[in-house]
Length: 167
Image 1 (cartoon, rainbow, N blue to C red):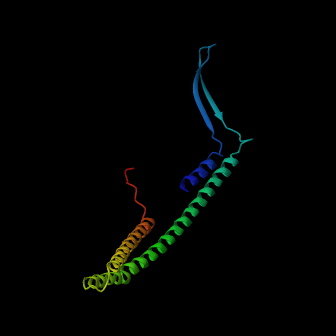
Image 2 (image 1 turned 90 degrees about the horizontal axis):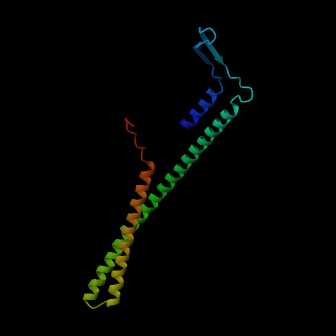
C-alpha cells in the first residue's frame, strides 16, 4: 500500500509541467564577442496531461488494497481453522490418553494375570496386548496432532519479526 500510494503521488507530480531555465555564454564568430544566452523551456501538456498515469496508479493502489484485505481475510480464516483444529486435537488427545488408555492397560493386566492362572488362552492375551498397543499408538498420534496444531496456531498468531535498524 505504501508503494502504491507513492506511485499515485509520483503520477500527480508528473502532471505539473517542468519549467527549465538555461543560462550560458556564447562566442560570436563574426565579431569575436562574448554574449550571454538565456533559455526558457515550458512544456505544454496539450495531448498528454498525465491523467491516464494518475488513473492507472490509483487503480494499482485499489488493487493493492483489495489484495491486502483478501490476505487479512485468509489469515483470519486460517487462524479460525487452526483454533478449531487445536480444540479437536485436544479433545481427542484427552480421550485417547485418559480413560481409553487406562481401560486398555487394565484389560491387558487382567489378561496377563488370567493367562498365568490358566483362565485365559494365549489368543485372549495377545488380543489384549494388541489393543493396548493400538491404544498407545492412537494416544501418541493424538498428542502429536495436538502439538502440530498448536504450533500451526502459534505460527499464525505470532508477531511479525522486527527489521534490524541498520538495514
